[in-house]
Image (cartoon, rainbow, N blue to C red; front, side):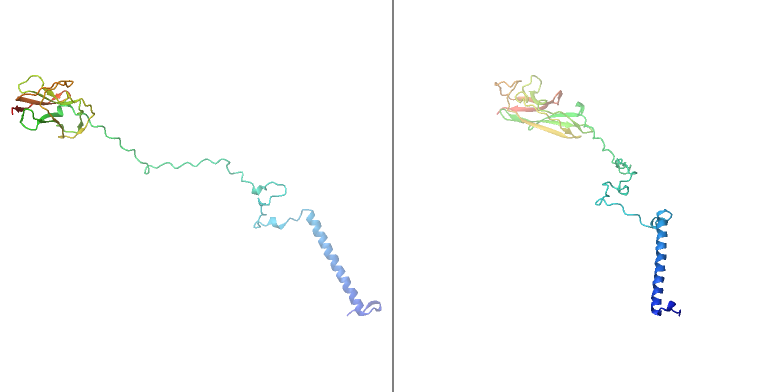
Length: 242
């Protein structure tokens, strides 16, 4: 141990030495701090946060807490690479497997029946009738062709007529007192028959249906069916006296 100088007690000497040592350390710290401040202000020392590639980037300003200037920061602005008016999305073109073929065209309408396939038959309910009876006459229309066809059989075109069996003037026609007009164009299948019935009062008639009508006397007569310009073979029948 060193001896006290100047005859000072050893305790006083140690206290002064400790104070001197502390002062020297403080001076060294001040010098180091001043040197660091001078180096930082000269720009030769940069922050280590930017030198670290793994360091997190500073957070952008939140829209709810904008910068003091009132403008959004560049990081928060929309990207300049985005198109302001994006092109509309078009539906994918249909593939051949999903394309529905168009429906087939409707079949053409059936043709009209020519005259040579239409058969007319005048039917009587009995071979003979008493004078004053009301015979039932029938007009039969048959399609004798191989295919279906249509035929106009409207009321104004069809008729049944009574004539003398040996020929002569027409005595009665179903169309004289029945001026009904219809539109009837049925489809007739091959071999199909359509029939029309009428009761005959046994009296004469004339076009316009005159009020004076005579009773047809006993004799031999024939019934003929007509459709437009077509006429059937005559069907014979007789009227007998009571």
